[in-house]
Image (cartoon, rainbow, N blue to C red; front, side, top):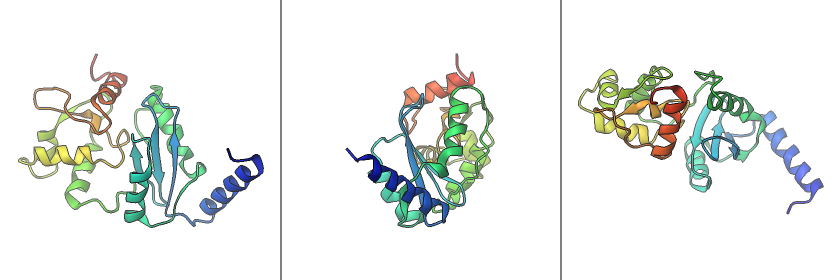
Length: 189
């Protein structure tokens, strides 16, 4: 257990590093969401990661590879995202007002994610429809890969993408979370 003065010094160090713009990525883990623990990362450009993985080692390594090695847990830079996620999960928010930082994503992924962002609250679309909107109607499976690797699920609503027959297929956070989100939005009863 960290003693109180050490903990306070550590917190001040992290806050000062974030305030001075010395971080490539600030992240925090939100243990108190309806979805379970979420790791959330932000850069000075915007939200770059939401992960359902409560063990952040792999995520932190990937963030360091894409955005730079200065990745540090600091709650203040992610407060806005935390508030918006809470509001969404409580049914008080239908869209997010945070900027996104999708650096490192291939062009096709960016096109697909841009089309995904247009799928409204409480609506669903199919992998094939999303592929067509992204300019490659035969790439439904590739769209599935993009959805599985979506760096910011919930905010970019890959849970709103269903199979051609309307079935709930695949979700990086698990089908139980996909169903929970679709029920929250009223897309399924």
